[in-house]
Length: 140
Image (cartoon, rainbow, N blue to C red; front, side, top):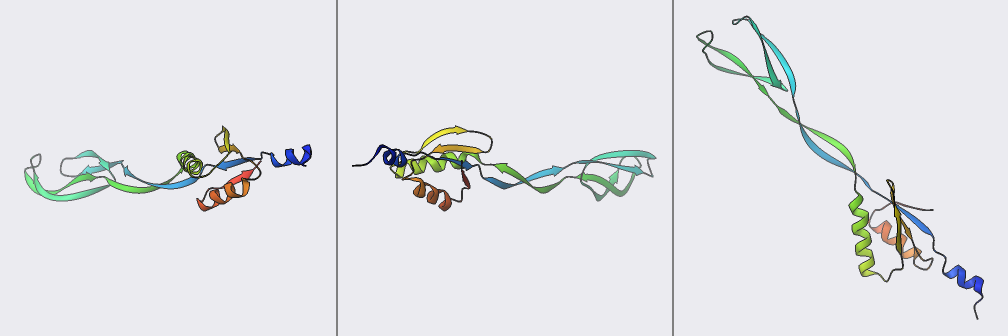
C-alpha cells in the first residue's frame, strides 16, 4: 500500500521552458546609394541611384558626340539576420503529442519560449525528445 506522500511524489509535475530557437537567415538586399558625378562636357552635376557606376560607350545627344556615359548599377548584398523561430517548437510538440502517450500540457508562452507542465514519469522521455530535435530547454 502506497502512502499519500508517495502518491504525491509520483504525480509531481515539473515545468519545462522550451526556448525558441534563434536561426540565422540570409537575405539579399539591394544596396542603393546616391552617387554624384560631375559631367565635364555638360558642366553639370548628375545623380545616380545604385552601388556603382557602369560606363558604356554610346552617342550623347546633349553634346552631339560618342563618349563614355555612366549609369547606376544596383548590386545585391547578402545580409545575415537572426530570426526567432516560434513555429519550430509548436510543430515539434504537435508531432510529439501525436506519437507519444503524453500528459504534458502547455502552460504559457512568452517571448523566450513555451512552458510545459510534464509528469515526473515522462520527464526523461520528454527531455530526450527535445535533445533529439535540437531544442534547448530549462527546468523551472
